Image (cartoon, rainbow, N blue to C red; front, side, top):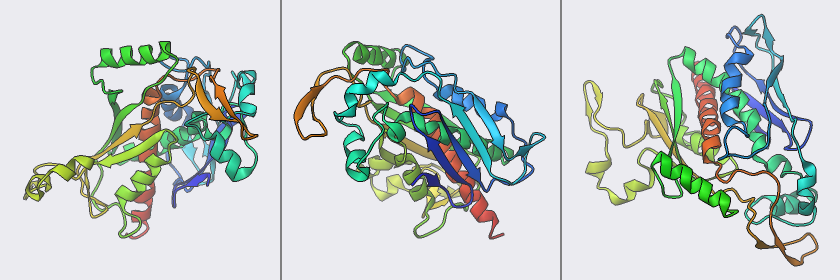
Length: 328
């Protein structure tokens, strides 16, 4: 599936080393103010080449609006957004034509489709997230008009929580030809109660699915998450007064429906699988071989995944708000 959402529907397209990547949005309400300046800042936070801690691939990731906007406002027609790939180095991936990278989707794509784009991973590349981020920026614009803000932050990288220690940990992994993962938290503030639908379209289920749809994410927590396993009910419940809740262990969602409190989500991000260290793998002929992945890769994807996660949460919330509006 390359599409996401029920009411605010997005379809992403493009490959890591193709001509362009982007997204088509259907279901955006008309009359909303929207320009490139509303979209570009989130893409700038995601783009590579901005720090020695990220991939050295030099892409400006300039977004172009192809349709759906007239005189600075949405028309209700599909919105097409595209970003040109400008700095591909496909020759760096020639070895991957016949070898599968451990930890990557090379093997499973080959098994599923019988063909794969080995240049940077094609659709399984993190570059695919550009379409999500561009669409998420549109959703964030809509949410801001309704008093909702979404922020993300890094909680830890490879067990380190201090910003300086995090930076040193990433540098150390890069120097060793390795990579590290980490933990990111995303919070939505100002969300109205009542979003989400029992039983199979619960808000937390939709959020979890959206976050797990990001390639590098291997786990999702909402509220206290896995920590609830060590608590009594009296500790985990959020007592209520006439003025509201006294705590937020539930992370802003009860019974799959937003409570009006902050929605708090944490995601576990795996280490980048493309690393220079020599590893054992298989080739397309079934032979056991060794591989050292060349090219330009992030020693840690955590910093660049923050805006992607913010975008995915925004997409879910806008979709649920439009769903709720249909019933009022």
